[in-house]
Length: 259
Ligand SMILES: Nc1ncnc2c1ncn2[C@@H]1O[C@H](COP(=O)(O)OP(=O)(O)OP(=O)(O)O)[C@@H](O)[C@H]1O
Ligand SMILES: [Mg+2]
Image (cartoon, rainbow, N blue to C red):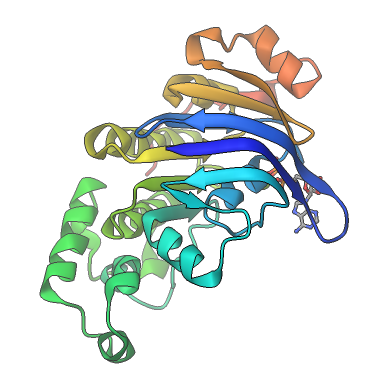
């Protein structure tokens, strides 16, 4: 369970990132966050793993209070909260397997990590994670040799190997072509349903938000301006969230899967 109670974020330069967010996200929910650039979507996601400190209110994630949390609490929390990014953030020079094993570092002793010797059960976990995203045959390929969609699947596998309670995804499909974006969103949805990992995804495209979100949260200027099911998120609602008329750029163009 994630509980935001009047959460405020003020950046060191004085910019208000979140302006009083109150939300409950139950375990296992698939939440999509939408809003214009600068609305506070990334800030919201990053408070959940403590990347951005909370300056007011209270934020409970899996039993940990983030406001004023110390380094040790943050480290323990981050082991349970996985994150994927628009830019995949893989180590390009090394293999898919080694990238996925990074997800196990939090549970690996100092000497083992220093010498890069994985525990056999971690290698097993990494294979299972790669199977879940359908690229186990790439285990010993260098990350730099994969397509964007494949790289994002490796990033998802890395998070899965971590066995998190919560998965955060900040614009995970923004660098992908539309069909590949759908494939990756489908992976995230399937993982959410099969493993019950609470998932929060920031998305730009409203059709993706409607297709994959159990719940859609609309943000504007650091506040929640819509909170409802995909069926309630009509075009009018999106126009209200965005504060403007919809354009062709707000939906994903159609196309064939490239993966
Ligand atoms: N490190 C930072 N320092 C100062 N201000 C910041 C910082 N990061 C974000 N902001 C500001 O906080 C507000 C919310 O930014 P945020 O990145 O959360 O928006 P976003 O909805 O993710 O936008 P985008 O769609 O462009 O990614 C913006 O006004 C932004 O300029
Ligand atoms: Mg952002």
